[in-house]
Length: 170
Image 1 (cartoon, helix red, strand yellow):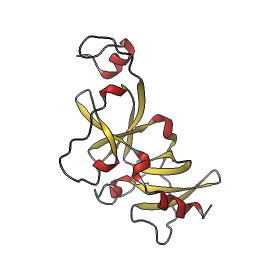
Image 2 (cartoon, helix red, strand yellow):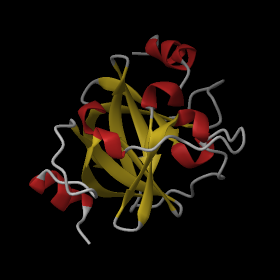
Image 3 (cartoon, rainbow, N blue to C red):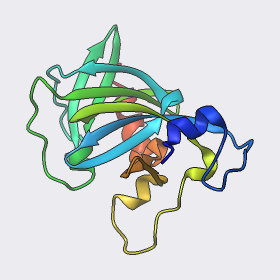
Image 4 (cartoon, rainbow, N blue to C red):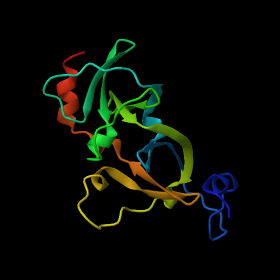
């Protein structure tokens, strides 16, 4: 069976035809047993975990802030954001620094997995099963080598007001 990466390289699909659909790249990472991806164009940096400074009156899922080369970056616990419990941070955890509406934000994840290249038409819609808080943050789903990857819409992950409140501390 041909993998998605092989399909991208060859330009073929399951029906054997060549498609001119746009290819997209995502950085994939794990949170618990789940695998997620964010558009590679929004990723600024991937770094190991470092201690944060907690801010008063910040959302529960915000671990705190770090100073990244003179820029104050809020770090959000994706596990807590998705109501999966608090992350017990270890040295193996990773922070993915992304740009959301011109603002640098860190997302705490368990591990970075891969760079995924897919065709835009391979992204499947989220099924309308329930009102899960996680599904509102998803762009779609893609199957890669027998595993399901949920593609995040990072703009919907955080409310603009949360980022604006943090803006004043720089």
